[in-house]
Amino acid sequence: MGTAMLLLPLSAGAGLLLGSMGVVNLKRLRAAATSMLQATTVEDAVEFYRLLRRVGKKWLGRVSGVGVPDVFDARAYAKIRRLNYTFLNVMRASSDWDAVAYELANSMPLTFEVAYPTLLRYHRESGNINVATVNTFLTILAQKADTFIIRKLKAAGAEDAEERAKKISEMAKSALDLGGVATKEGREALFKMDEELKRGEGLLNPGSTADIVAAGLMLLLLAGAKI
Image (cartoon, rainbow, N blue to C red; front, side, top):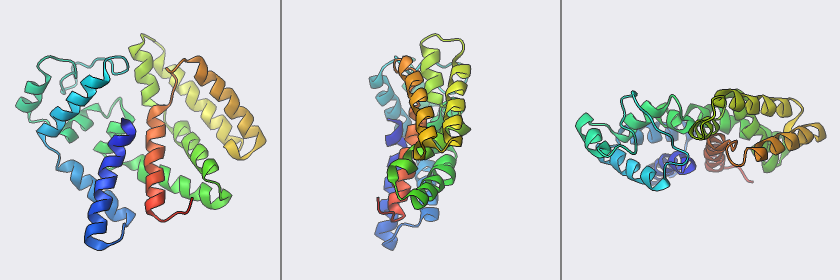
């Protein structure tokens, strides 16, 4: 779902630019996507809450004292309308604990300023989209602990959620320092990291990082990369 949340404003912005200019410029695309998010409404927020309720409680956890109503509050829709909360307001309120929300609330800084240029650099250097994708994933994860990991661990009752997520980020940095998927040493470190993630039985899946890389890949394609 996080991937779709990032790709939707990018897709809409790209369509707007293609329709009006016949070409997609990434600087203009970022501005267009930001404008669309700023134009979201209260009813967009309500529909987003409806969608989250369908996802279920397993990985969402509960929130309180943050201004925005909890998804599973029976009066959530009424509160959203009374507070005049738009979808963008919800993203801003959620940005402290969710990387995708942070991206949407802040004009997608990791997507445009880290994911895309890192993908572009590795793709040009290696000529291999797999190397570019994996090493970009490692780059982002090394810089920022994955919020999806933290949220899932907390929902499962773990008291050391931040520490465990930080450990995964440290493993990503170690693998990247060795060359990531482009070198034998880096791949060996990646295999060890993969075993650690598997031991989490789904709790250690860096989903937010993957969402941002997917959005970066969309920018790479829109910029004309042949992969």
